Image (cartoon, rainbow, N blue to C red):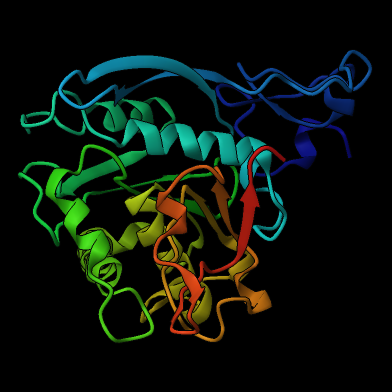
Length: 310
């Protein structure tokens, strides 16, 4: 069996090679290193390290800073219902990069930080057209969309990052509660992200059809409220579009300093337990709108809430 004459159609001159001492005698590609189980160790490979930039500082004294993060596609190897601290940390880094470039008031290359980070991570077709090129208004929202294949698989990661810093007048939308179950201001912003996502998918549907979609959603503060609602929407409906389905265990939603978003009675349904909101209990933002105030304001977050430190 382990003889070149037994492998019909194999080009053993330019593409393949065969050697009884290599690859257990089976054909191997020329120029590609062959695994040697005897010399390999069981120690895990270090997770690749990346640098990223983000904006921050006191109002009127904003600046741009840098830090490091760690990313691997293997973060999506386990079910989204299992909390992954490394993925949470990476999600926070991505959310911070999406704040926008300082200073406030300039909108040229506003999304440069998040574009650079996603590009370094290997994501393609990065779209920052929603919210970043224009001055924010009460009902506007900024979001980033990108995707990448997981090498050697049929999985395609689609990431949605919702802007949660440097959003200026959007702060006013945080106080628009409305009369329906979902917080009206956050719901308006969520619909805008959904509409833009539909356009993004439609413009390159061939890259998503017949693929196993991994959906990664993240955001900070106002952005995390929208991320929380987005995660709940996709978990409940199990579809990206009418012809692209999703598996709940492939929907990863990590939110930071998340306000309460809905009065819906199903907020604690087990199906939403793949949504994680990570909260500093001393931060005012996650305490608004109140839950259970006089029995009238009964707002909640979907999924799990993890309070720091924990």
